[in-house]
Length: 204
Length: 204
Image 1 (spheres, each protein chain N blue to C red):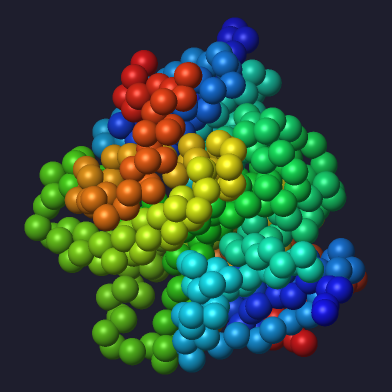
Image 2 (tube, each protein chain N blue to C red):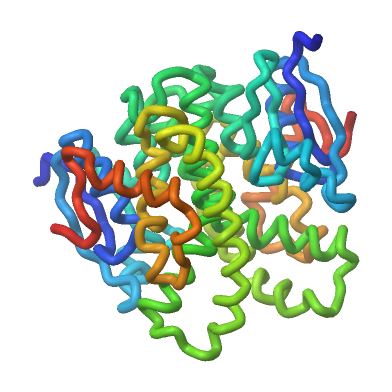
């Protein structure tokens, strides 16, 4: 019987990488269970019993409960910590950017990367990819405007909002997005990479 | 000078209605500033200065700060209240369903309603509408499975996760989704409608 939480995740997924970044920051020990999305691992009867929405990452707590949704897992693990926001307004600001990530950023930037890098950029997805271009650059523009004014997404301090947005922004080029015109985003990426407990994507 | 927070919103929008539902529950006084999305009100220079992402609802606090993202506004207004979850795990469960709402539910069910009801169901949107059908019914299926086991989305208690999901689920038919095969969702809708401080969509 395990005494550590277990994370079900795909090492290539930015949503799963978020959890690795936070656990490294907070020195949380966990077990990693590799799940292959492309092989259908998230749609087996066994997996759907843990998460009926069939998505990863999924956090298995030591008491047998399961928690899906990458940003909810971040909020759970950081609950009460400064990384979730040091005061009421900052906590809301952190959530604002995490909802922005899931609604305005991920569906354009992460899914473009999935189509290009993992589906091999098939012609039948060309139209879908093109449709995500404008939305993705709009999201990057909103981030750039924010990061030109302050060091991190929710203010001067590093929070889980930075983790949520870093995951797919730092590999945006893999989906065909150039960060050449986004100097504040590039500086912010380097700022996060320089953190003492930073781990790279795909690392064990 | 106002002593009350102001909500910028469109009365036809479910995302804006969420804020009305919560303020009624918590007896929060606020001013409502009607914003017409279709008239481009969210893309004026003045509005973008308040929310660079050009979206409503937007909460203007009495100290001059602004908070966008409907679910972040809910979390802010309910911070510390049982409606946000009575314990650490429930708070995460609440967020889980709010992220589910923004990623798996709203982009299918709310946007279908927008196309049908507000854009007049134009032929050029037929393919987009069809693409949202499967995703919308999948999201409803996940909700049904949950609500067949417990009274509310995050457990037995009513929380802001219910508010977030009620907003567009109770008008899912306006986007062409039938709830005939979702009895637990229908019972949950009636349960919420029966709450003492319930307000209807579009009400002042």
